[in-house]
Image (cartoon, rainbow, N blue to C red; front, side, top):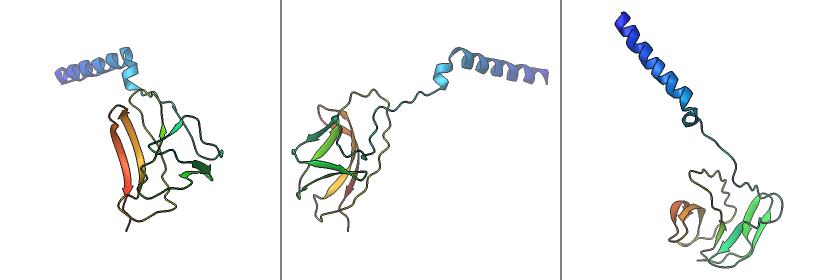
Length: 127
């Protein structure tokens, strides 16, 4: 019994020492890098319109194109040099939709601006 107790105590002591000497690995630091709730009626300067230079409007907590056209691959990009890892929390509200294969909306995190590779969530082709 004392042999078992000694092994358990040594393991516990090791864990306790590691936790005391390396506490930073046990905690995660979080801070907000960018926030926009689209309620102030103006589009932040950090956004860039890409692919087609269309007009965007911010109204009632929603940001949208003023005159979208079918097949219009237009992006509103938040350019930032955010260090990894980072998390995005986004609400997507579809309030209008045009039918067709090119109708889509979504969110993408671009990890490499050179080749546009990244992670995407795409809403496409409602029936």
